[in-house]
Image (tube, rainbow, N blue to C red; front, side, top):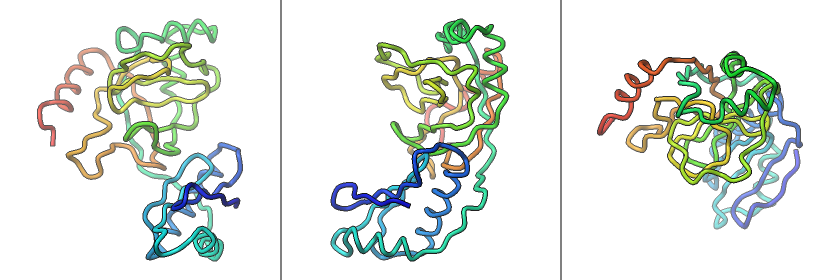
Length: 228
């Protein structure tokens, strides 16, 4: 483990630069161990692909104190698996305007892209960028595609995109430069619920292709006024 400060009230614990499930298992194992230790100075732990940010109360402890406390912990990197969450997706059309490009770029048909994208069980490595934006690991490199040269100013909530070797889902309407191949009718971020995010780090995600009728029905149920 390598340690470095993040400002004056947080530190970063790094397990290297490799992005894989084994490394992510270690990140989550350490996160759970720190939380269970119930340090009085602990504010928050934030897992990422291969690192963990530890936010602390600088009035109670300093960087070196937190570092020593973490180094004194014992943890085992057992396989970490959260819930299996199925995400229905309407691929292509107005909801997936870049599907044709992704297919052409990789020498595939749109149907092949859909089949390849919806086949794996992905893993939520961490949440970031927007509340509930899940960075998913496990995408087949056969559909890896570069980001847009000029990001869109408005990407609809629920849009499913590809950026390089990653895939993810926009939880809120926002600007974005990922290649959009579809959209889910599910609401990934709802501040009136606890927790407010549908997906959590460590969860497993399976994309399920649906048709337009199914999309409309689920969308109305998920986004009806109030939805709490």
